[in-house]
Structure formats: C-alpha cells, structure tokens
Image (cartoon, rainbow, N blue to C red; front, top):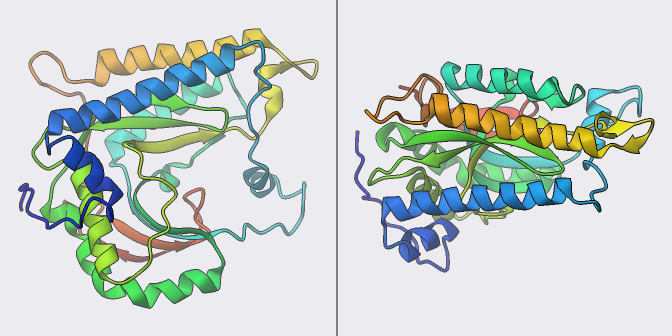
Length: 298
C-alpha cells in the first residue's frame, strides 16, 4: 500500500483536478479548505434562495418522476447513458445516511430516497447523456486501463471525514471533506483522470468541483412545500431548519472529537468494503446500468 503522492500528473491545462493541487501548492490542508469553502458557500447561497420571497419552489426531476411512477407515462425509458468510476459507501456510512433520510422525510414526505444499494460517490465521470451505442464505443478504449483504475484506491488510501448535508432546489446530498493526509481524495480523482486520458479516451466530465458528495434524496413532488396548491414559506423554512438541525447533529456526533476519535459513520476510507466500480449505461440515479469491473475492497 502506498500513500505517497507518486503519480505523474498531466499538465494543469489537461487535468482539472491537478489545477487545484498545484494552486494549493500540494498542501492537503488547503485542499481540504477548498472543499469546505465550496460546500459552505453553496449551502449559504441555497439557504438564501429557499428563504427568498422570490423562491418558486423545488425543481422537480421529470425523468425520475416518470421512473418512480410509471403510470404518468407508461413505457417511459431514460435514454441518458453514462460511463463513470464510482465508490460505494461502507455499511457504517449507509446507516448514517438512512438516519438522515428518515429525518428529512418527516418534513418532506415525498422526497425520493436514494436506495441503499444505489448510494455512490462519482470519483470520475468519463461521459454522460450519451446514447447506448456511443458509450459502448468507449468501452474498448478504456478497458486496458480500467483494471488499474478500479484498484487505485486499494494502493492509494484516502479518507473522507466531516459529513455535512448540502442542498439545492433539485436534491439533497451528504458531503465529506478529504482527510488532511499527504494523499487526498482529490489526488485520487486526479490520478484516475490521468489514467483515463492515457488510455486515449476523450473526457467529457460535467465538472471537477472540489466536492465529495453522495446524493441521498431528490425532489419529485412540489406539493411537499405547498398548502392548498400554493408554495408555503413556513414549510420551506421547516425544510431548511431540518437540514441545519441535522448538520448540527452531524458535526456534534460524527466529526472528529478533540482526542481524534471518530464515531462509526463519520469517516469513510474510499474503497472500504467494496473497491471502485467501472459502470456504464442508464445509471443516472445509481440503480440502473451495469458494472463492467470492480476493484478489490479492503
């Protein structure tokens, strides 16, 4: 096992993950601070949006709504195909997420809950919103590199800590920070990107934001925040308050204690229990698609 920063990264212009590492002078504390700033800034912005008099309600996902309730459009098929490398959370993190989901549904009962078996973090997105044939054409290009990629977390251990709920008008996610180690989760993402590029496959990732998050719920019913068909500011405030209450609970109970101890669920070693997975297909919500290769867990 190696925790050294020993991968040869591509130039900053070619690897978006390498950009943050270089601008942070490869300082793990600065990388962690960027992840923290990203999620806190986002939550602050979204709170302001939700509580604004101009807020028009949540953004219902029309595709997920039809998949969840086939009676709306019988025979509907999600045609968006992707190729990704993901990590599954260990059971202790799954249990923490399920508790958060339970508490969230108390104030927004129609929240679509990501099933335990679909929970994942996307370490690297190769392509998205393609046809099945387009994704199939990419498979042979990256197959030779995939074996090393799915096992990279086994030899390059990274830890995620300090869980916090983040939200916007579409979904709620559980976000983590990369541990302040010499080799961080962001280094892992950089290395996966390098390995994929070296295979010759063209990268079409949506973004490379400093975020380590798992979606835990999506909005598919606008009426949860309405009374008699009209958006109810009191219900919106109740949702924001519940998220903030849960975040205070997470920080109090699951962030590192003064002695460094971390309660089960508050720390996630990427690749723990299950290795990284190479997945393709209609997998937008975690349950569809297929796994072409799985790395070794530890």
